[in-house]
Image (cartoon, rainbow, N blue to C red; front, side, top):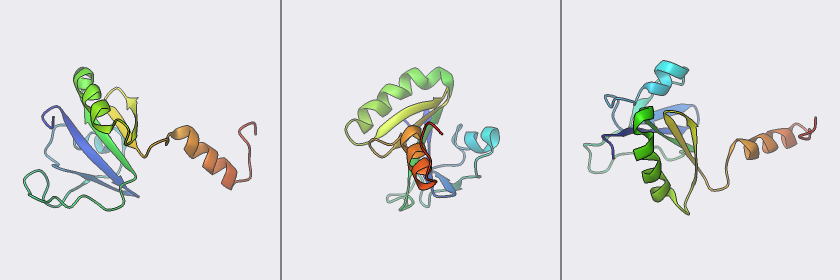
Length: 118
């Protein structure tokens, strides 16, 4: 329900939102110093919004008070298609299946020739 939350798309170093005027659209930028998000061309009002082609992470951002409403909706929408995790009281991260910080750390360590123990 877009009245309860904003969606942030991460495409490399670029961040995009459907509507910069949504209540939580700029939350990550204002409070956590993430890049200032661009608005998706067409946004909610367009018939065919131009969502970036290489999105590697989506964030659903809402007030902590709305999380109990939003989280089950996200869970139903991504079931069997993506992984998700609540990373902050205001934020749910949606990623490719079987992706999380631990898998990312393992890839980084391997590329550096290190083990978890090191």
